[in-house]
Image 1 (cartoon, rainbow, N blue to C red):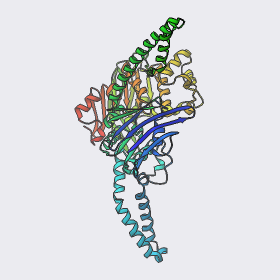
Image 2 (image 1 turned 60 degrees about the vertical axis):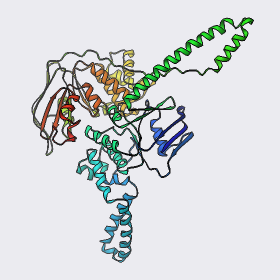
Image 3 (image 1 turned 180 degrees about the vertical axis):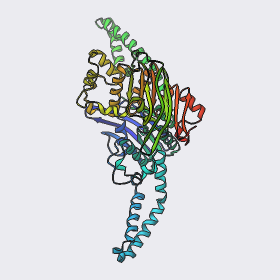
Length: 543
């Protein structure tokens, strides 16, 4: 269905692909992986026809439709979310717009003289619209938007008033409603809550076309894909199996390559030693010449590229009291919508609470109340003795000074720390070499999140309050964060849609449902086993 044959592509001085090849068949679900800057988005654009290879060929079956979701959603305004989704579907949406215009014209007294022509055109358009199953399109658009956690009000409201994250969902819904023969999804799991993520997972499992996707969510990838294509050093290598199996295969392959490389290096050293020893002796001239020719013909095994596994080690935080945070008779409402009515909740030392709840249940509000970013309408929220809090929220990234470099930002926060310690810290969070000289203004969302996280964890708090800490983070940084937080000796309260993160770090679950608050001892894995579902919003009313 889709083939890339011996493609080469250069971006400035950076070689992205060199004689790279891959194929994607109908029904295949493939994960595209590789480090940042490896060329994943470029590959998507070449398949979508938005870019061309410098050499080689991209072949797509005649008549095959491709839906491409990227992180650049463009401008949306002046129509409802439903209309914006239908707009992306093609002829049916244009016909729907024409039907609406014709209906308006037929009841316009000023156009009574055109009635015969209007009725005739209406019949033609309506027939074509029915052929394309247009009347089901509105229902389909609403079904997909509901799956992505849109309320009726948000579906019918002006799409231009939505935040960037919600516009992303509209752009994703466009592709899903289109039902193309092939889907290219670049980080579709970004900006989704847990319920939307699980809905999308089921949708893609049942999709019968060809799927090529990237995602920084390990669990999401594992449940959908059956094959992995890795971009590494300009090549495309295909692995069968899910992401976990790919990692095992890659590690095995690298181990074998390393052993091969070392064996060849030992053999080369032996041959070179012989040549150097006997090259001046006429009696060994034929042997020396033979070995020189042999060395020239040997195909050299390349040393496997080292994948740096970065680890951040916490300094031991100061010990807090046993009672870390307490909610007493807390009431909170936004306008007429009550979020909490008489909430009683206690966080004790070394507990790691993950907060679950459907969209709008009050997960972020709970964290804001603890952090003091908002106040309860009634009741009290108290922190215990010797509590030193670190609060990570999405708006934290907006507080960075755009003119500061990464290093300057760290230096301003920790003026007493040495240059070496700050550079090591920056390296742990993915800022190596010249990256520390980037200004905060040009950083991507992921880079900003990493910088804020680095600043928060360098002088460690004993109580971490984290609102979607893995948003924008790549797989490697996420793994580093999970491994580091697993060693953290303090207390945690967090919201995340990343099930790997939830399972690895929680030892308590607080579930927010319309019927009230439920507490579960044991972490997220135990919660799933006990309730039979992965998120409360999947079953209105929770457990």
